[in-house]
Amino acid sequence: MAHPLVLAIDADETARDLYGDWFSAHGFQVMCAVGTVGLSLALRRERPQLIVTELRARDLTLAALTARLQSDATTRCIPILVLTSASDRTVIDSAKAAGVAVVLPKWCDFDLLDSWVSALCS
Image 1 (tube, rainbow, N blue to C red):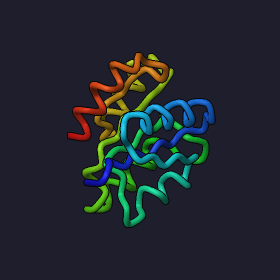
Image 2: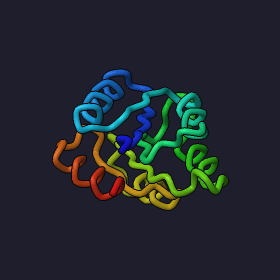
Image 3: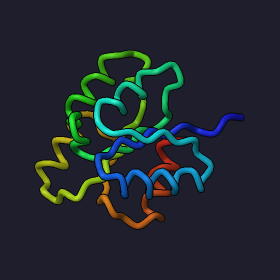
Image 4: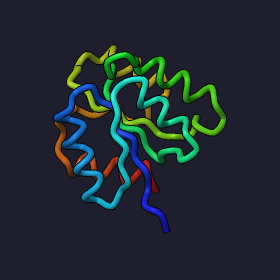
């Protein structure tokens, strides 16, 4: 059985590496990218089972990412988990309204991340 594929889209190289390493250590295949490159990867034939991103990944906004994924029947069911340092409730609510499954603090406890990833990838 193939391991689930996770796409990490983040402009911060440290964050991409940290989360990429964590997902790899937990048995996931991982693709890491910045901005629109990440969107291109999500639209490939080997679709990720989960996208982990920030609110804005360089040249790609969360609104643009979710709109493009939701416009395609083959990608609209991919759950999106946002990791953000923003604590403004309006920002978090707008992410949820855009179709994001979960919004977590960017540097959250890995046990919290693990529980949400398990729920979203099961």
